[in-house]
Length: 279
View (cartoon, rainbow, N blue to C red):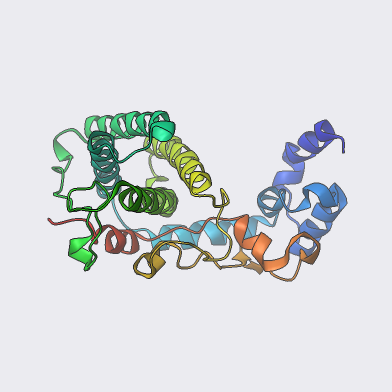
């Protein structure tokens, strides 16, 4: 496979802006080569008709009505949660020595995210909520920091599961609010910069739990109570096109769902976070 030619084809402005049918776009993807066809789906969809892109933008705009301040405070709530979670984990002794560097690094990232959002919001920044990582507000009884008698192995398994859940939620949450920040390029840039780091956290933690770095369908190994974190990930329709039957040689619907993350709405995220927010 000539990768340079592939990149040239993907960066061809004419190919990315001309109006063409979705069928034409998928035919073009087939011509790229089987080894990269699935990976090129987002680019192929970008070359779909301008009408389809406009429809997609309109749906995003209609779906997200929050103001930029609301969205940044929403993101700050998630970052507060992750910051406190990792800091308590580092202080509790639950994290194994082998994994300590990873979580020290993630914790520093979360500190930076909180600092950035607080500075960006200024006087509009919300106060840090009170969190309960036992999941008590959601009816759970976890002990990820060995505060209530859990042994280290049990507590660390819960800590890792929560870390995965928070990171996977964060990735979908930032994506879900991108449309609301589209009116401010600076804020959108910063949000997407955080989003990509959260995605790396999610992939790292998933692999530490012996899972794939990506999500297939809505499969997960977290407790049933956390099913909302993965709700909707089984979607196979992108840009108004159902991709389920188009790539049978590459894993069919499973591969299609793994190739895309689905956004979560603000209400969906706050419902998940509500398991751990006292007030």
